[in-house]
Length: 473
Image 1: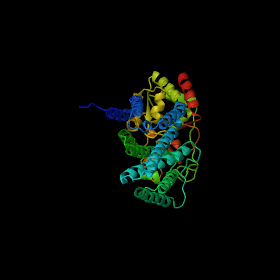
Image 2: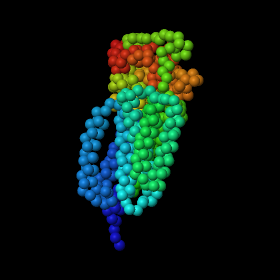
Image 3: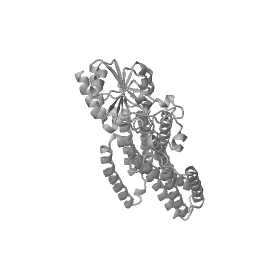
Image 4: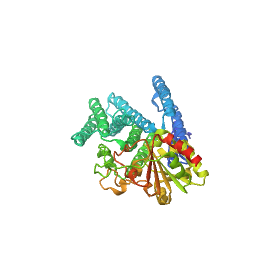
């Protein structure tokens, strides 16, 4: 009776690493366990890669050149990725995720293309389902690759972040999608390399025209969806390579990506179809009155000294962080202010909106960098439950996520979006660089509320002045 073969042991290792990925996802669902989850995922991935080098079915065991090229590619990838990942700013994290999505989708597409070309050289035509697996991975991977490239360009401001629309856009998108479906079916039936190349070209075009009409705050939702696409492309590559680990890992990424996309859409109070096809944010309505009359309304501005006294003698203060806090890298100063207030006996907590910043969890990670205790962070619903008991709501760099138009103005682009009810606090202090609107491109009624005081300037500088003022109060 023979014992387990090397292939059996490799399969067992793949099973263990797959379980590691599942547990890692579980850890990533909680801010407290996110770091451990990330480490577990990295360890599992490393084990899987090492095991693959001993897998007798791996392609580089059949040709030394393949092994050399694989090692060179891994070294180049590490040389590029490690410095980028270590130096990237928190505000640029969505761009980094977009690049990762694109690279993953492109890699899956290249695998499908390579295997397809290998099959085309065989005397016997492979089974239809084998070709279909490759075409599915090729199609989804190409859409993810080109779409992620455009999303990166939008977020990096290499092109306008606003939706780009043109007459007949949806019809053109539909026609391109139909053409891809026809070419894909014909490629599966005939095994034609020419038709495969046409399918690749059309898929790349679809990725571009699919992303162009999406802009502003919808881009992070799009990135999450593209991340799901990449996962599905990787799963398809797993079928192509007969690798169960890739199938499991790709399916996990695809499923978690679509769940995150739905959660983000829900947090914005909109359907996924509305996010993808409404060209939200293409019209900027700011500049006149927020009531649509075109009349200019006045705002009340204050000084750091006045606000410092207000904060120092408050009973309860909530800090509502947003993208402006991330841009100014003011998280450490915000914590310093909170700590100083708590030393004076003031109750302080942070109200976190699900889509504050550019990505889900953006504010949680940002504040974790400043070692803000997790028990001081309240999710939106928990924060809203006590907002009416708050003396001062200090809004730092947030805008659309506290805009009362989401509750009070039917027809507003953000109407129906759940918000943090900062307007229910006794006093509202708004830290802003200027009166420019947020991603939604609309005025914020809260700025004109009689209980609101504005402090203009860089968030970090303003918070530093508030720290000094509270200390002197």
